[in-house]
Image (cartoon, rainbow over all chains, first blue to last red):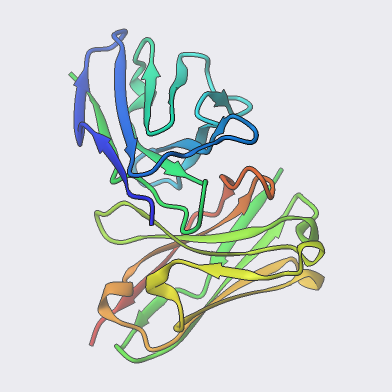
Length: 113
Length: 122
């Protein structure tokens, strides 16, 4: 199984500042035939179901604010929130869909400083 | 508006069985792959498995801890997804979410239900 490891486990950022969350996969999740990274990011607010933010490592899901961006390739990926808003308090998960089982990172809890 | 509504959770004794349901509206259910994801208390997300649509043979796939005890099925005539869990263990205690799979090549989960809580305890 591909193991997804996120860092840090928790993060406190001031409103308006940048938040950065990292995700590492134990295997390369870049598919050479289409040059796509099979990596998604989800946001889970307290008491709610997760919502997909980004897939293909950097493609924003429809309706997701452009302050959310994804980058990286191969085994190392980053989710960046350019200017933290109060409504961004949540746990963020990365997920690989390169191969079954489709594994998630352990989550990163983002709070306001 | 796409809606997914799970039901069937509750308190079950170890060794017991449970069938969870997920009714989907707002999209053509028969066209989509469906998945179950669970979340233990205070824990992260764990993929349970998925079921493909009939055009893709309707086959299923499961995470390793689920193989043998979990069965995903669907009834396209009533837009309903199921998860049968047998020989329940205390570690199966979790919120179980159903979700749609975006496409067969983009296996991310784009619409989610609110979840149904399963507690396995004597």
